[in-house]
Image (cartoon, rainbow, N blue to C red; front, side, top):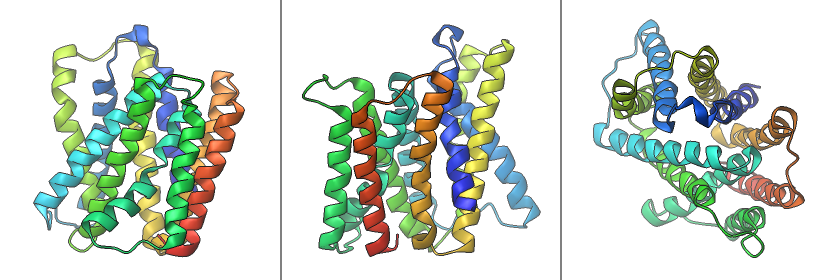
Length: 274
């Protein structure tokens, strides 16, 4: 239940990103600032209430995780702005497959044959979605894949950080890093006075923070291998939002590609437990 709620809240973050019209003049960097600022304030309060120290156990690795996460989130927001919602969210779900590959390369973790099959299914699914034979590859499409790569790099770092730092502390410092990195954009550009875009900006931060908290709670209640698969529900939510809110039915290739990625994720879940 917690993981499904987390997926639900995280699935509406790109919705609010797309709902802010280009003519509002609000750059992607300010959307990212709000995403980080709200999470930083909420998580700081949670850490204080629980009496958890703000001191990180592994500052260097935490910094690397934050840099990967920032790069991945920036690429993801740019991809969301340039692609249909369902395509951007689905392609971003390649990140667990990148975790498998990067953990094999850098952490020496073994890949089972069935996991290799899962990785192949995931990447074939993305190729089906992007349809490179009939549609020229665009910058947003490339950014969607890059966002998954950087997210996978951040999650790979988390596999080591879980030995030294609490999940809430990791998320707090990542959110603080996002806030600091994109603060200059807010200082230079100012804050919009238009009510609707301002509400959407706050909703980006609130929904993103709620999603992170629910997912953190899910991983505290059960082993990761039991709950991680439910994160893929966000793909279903994204398709629903695209149909209901943007009056756009995903093409058949998106459904087929998403099915392949979901199948790959399920195979990895059943045979890897992560």
